[in-house]
Image (cartoon, rainbow, N blue to C red; front, side):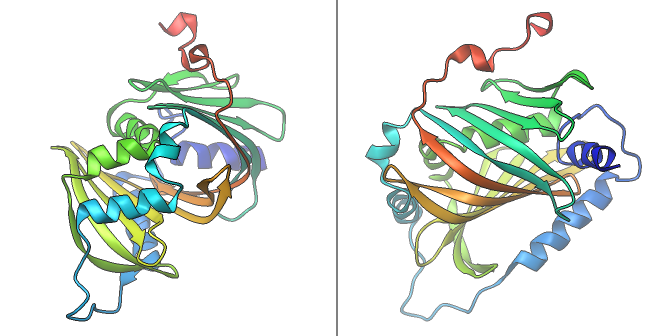
Length: 272
């Protein structure tokens, strides 16, 4: 039963995009994400007249400095993260390994309790999921756009390029953090919000809403428990809310600049 429940969670969170889930429609998914956002994000205490909002440039620079500095990140071309991927009710745990290669390649490997593995891959242009149980399926539409943005945003330099044309719109409370909110449009079909802790400068939440013919497709990622690894800071606790499901991610190990061959991110021969 846990394996069946796990597959349902993976379907809802973006894996196995071709599987039908009639009991969770777009409106229900949007409602759940909105409710989760309202619970985690609240208006902050109003700013005083002598505390103006930071500029976009200052906010992005402070954030870059908080995670180790722009120059240090430029020397970081790859990352390997290991940890646990769990359902919201903590009833199911998966072993997880994430490989990231700049500027926008990523691979997430999940190991199920029965030994089966799932590979979720983005090569910077397309994204797909592979498993022995469900075969091969490509992401399309809004799900693909969300995957590409997630892979793009794993590199702080890409975040700066995308967000520097945005606007700091105010302050909001995110869990225990007072944050500055930076909003920007990635393109005509997407709108993003980044929430930076007002004290530390660290990015603690991102929200992306992608317009589709079926309605808005929203993805939120909460980041916390930043820890230093070789002079850089990584969030060791994350929560992803997408398509009506909440997934919790706990990182246990980070390796900076491991050798990662580009062939790791290639499609299977039969899918090319």
